[in-house]
Length: 435
Image (cartoon, rainbow, N blue to C red):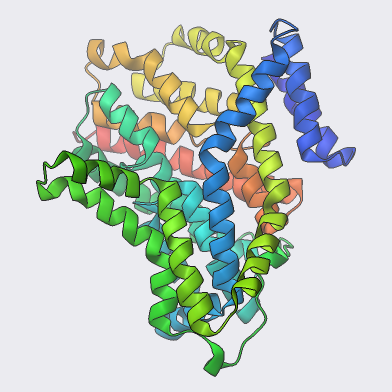
């Protein structure tokens, strides 16, 4: 624990005080942590490389294609059109709530990383057009995406926990929905009221110049193109319930439902609907795509660095040591599951790793203590969201996209995630009184 604490403090000091590039800071801290935690010196760099490869392997395609799609949505005027339609529908006064609802609906079928890069252009278009505080407007929608990622199947972590605990997917979803709504409201719009004065100049790549109304794409094309990834994922999610048993059809749908393929299809469609159809040349569109990748290159490196740090801590076995010590604590199983997941999350940064590791530790308690397995899924899910900080790729995504200081990212993102986590545990304990 002392080594982890020293490494986290060192990382914060390198980035915020010494102004070291975050990617280089992660490399230095990851190597130092590996050596101090006893990983053989000839295996430290291997762990660093594996951590980078593992995290980028799942995110590189999604983030790059999402950035390209976002750039095209912004540059074509589609984001401006979507913002105008939303504000005209609900009024500027309630635009934040409209974005929260959109984030929640989109977050159910959409992986967090995809949802983030997909919705950021919409958030920024509202921010620029109506001169609203970026964090105040954006954080509630991001809270919606985070809650669905941690609490609701079919997201990877809660879905895996349902299987591990032999819980019921539908029941878990219903309980999760009961907890998710108040968590989003309290950690989103309510908490955001205290963040109006946080200075933020979001990435310029998503800032499109105001275009005349006659140059904008239609409302239908704008919404359809921006939400196409959601529609495709929803179609593939409902496909198994159609009763189709054809093996070839199932393989094709599994291929088309992969997030990377979904984003690729969406980008191809957007290239036509928001590019060629609007009279833009392929060379102009290609420049937009190149600019988008340039602007997120540092974000990708930072995410890679956080993956290296996580892998070093995992390889060293420190998460298992922490969990074993906590098992001797005398506390209710639902609270113990939350605590173990939270400690691992804070130590490693990965919500999925925290959830699955905690599940393996408390799995026997679910049977021996007759714990409701659906609630244990949600308790661990809530714990896995606790206090996201510098070793979590989500922390850096939010910081870099919204162009915030480390301090303001802690005040906004980290506190929001902690609120969601605590509210989730309280919700689980309340439901447990009645079921």
